[in-house]
Image (cartoon, rainbow, N blue to C red; front, side, top):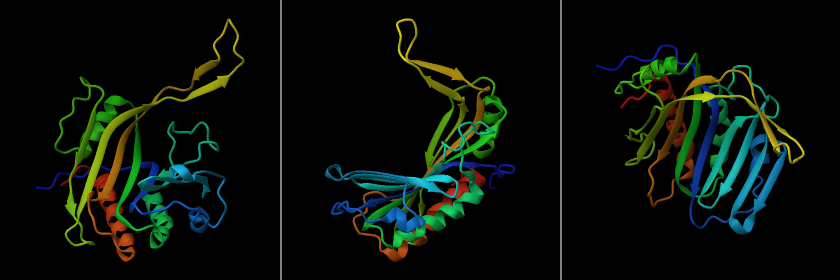
Length: 259
């Protein structure tokens, strides 16, 4: 018998991520990827060619898009633009509903996969939040997603659950897909930091707490093709592979921890 699905999943996406692990022969240079993807110039760019590092960032449709290149991996991350909304109304930063933004993100980054460096592995990640009234309600809610776990909402704290349930790919023959999910209940507290001149009678920083802490169920997704694969994935299969990873992530967000 299949476990019952959680009632009305309502995940907000705190961030969404595409990761490509380029081949060791990849040499960092200015490819103009950010501008090609968005059609505009980035707001900031920091390059350290001798270290193989590049960070390019700027606004994208009301959120913040970041390209982060490090030795061995390339990340595209869509996150909230905190500079435009220093105090979110519901107490947590998010780019919008997961169901609404996942298609936007997929359409955005899929085009880049046709010209990305040769790679033998890709990954899709995301951090999702579902606001709840308090910690106890969060534990009861997250128990609806974790069918094999029994949680005591009143007599326990600091809950954290992590599991990988691999599946075989339908896109690439004989390739395993990792379905890693991490579950917890988080508390968010708005804090403002005021800088002031250091004097003998007062500290250099003052911290002012805002409203009451906001509790939220937190789901961190990390879906990836298998590590250690030697052969390069063809560019023709990268977009379908990403679509498969995104579909598996959406399944976890909707049904919870299922085999």
